[in-house]
Amino acid sequence: MTNKQALQKSYSILSPYSDKQKWEFNNNLVHLKYITEYIPKTSVILDVGCGIGILDLALVLLGYQISGIDKYVFEESNSFSVDDIDDLRRVWEEHGLEILPKDILRDQIKEKYGAVISIATIEHQKDPKRFLQNIIALLSSNGLLYIATPNISHLLNRARFLFGLSPMSGHLKEWFEKGETYEGHWREYALGELRQMFESLNLQIMAAENIQSMKPGFPVKSLRALYVSLFRALSYLVPGAGDTNIIIGRKK
Image (cartoon, rainbow, N blue to C red; front, side):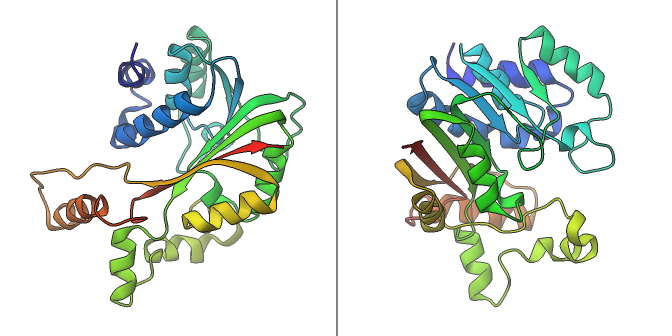
């Protein structure tokens, strides 16, 4: 089974819960490429902030041993909530996937893992150092840490800044209104900043790459879709201008 076939099957199995996340298919496919390239199947993996487990189920189908933790999908009244969580649990159990309602910053996790992955989660953290330290504590000796997060300096953000707009202006209203209960992006990072964080935590950097994970879509149906697709296409030509930063480190 190829990575793409595994991901397609995962989306199908998790439907209808996965339907609203189909727009992330190419992004997830990129993560599968890097994870299967760097993390051996002999490693037991933990996914921190795994959501409904789309990527995790694809990895199970590819022969990996993986479990996940997430708090938001189990809670009520947030943007990540699942209305029928018991039915979703049944789907996980039927396919040998365990996802638990745990918070990496709050709950004790006794197990050690050969690898930890965390995708689109660090940008939601008010205390990224503590977040990473708690993850590193779960790694066995020489364990691998895979972090992926939106690139604050992607090409469209650069254009926004050039015209006097904030790269994170779309988040302001919700962040301002919700305060400490805000669930969105507290901070996004450039690739160099991720390197600095890994180096300060004494992780050996195995790979650090900027990629354009979301493909441009043509033809387009609106003006906004046109300029988003245009900037996505141009991002392939400008170094460091892709939408996603990926960094992989090894615990020394």
